[in-house]
Length: 147
Ligand SMILES: [Zn+2]
Image 1: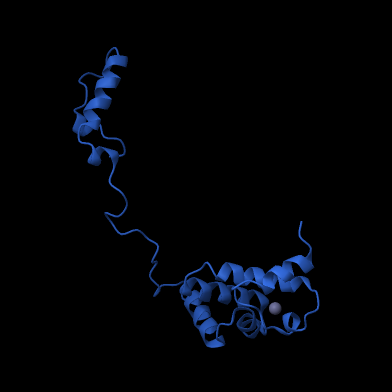
Image 2: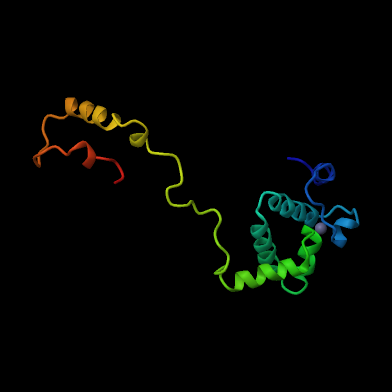
């Protein structure tokens, strides 16, 4: 496991935002330095609204002075963090989820890509199945998986 000094040396060479809080500016070894760095590592992978909401959650968890500390840690403006707080307070009702897939999105099913696949699969099953106890075998169009 890397020491705190090793992690701090790696942090200095990264393009990830560097915290400017008093602890991190002091250059004294401190576990909050790693915590602040991890916040910025996470922030580097989030979308802009997600960064705002995460900063708001952390600021709320910290309580008094939280927005100012998160502004130092992340480089975000306190106004942006406040906006995230207000959005969270309203349960993100006015914030669309950009990650929901639009209807019809995604790749086509194997059955749609190969129209003969269903017939081929039913032929394979027919060779392994002695009889269908409830009567008539389903038509290929009725036997689609997941429909
Ligand atoms: Zn810091």
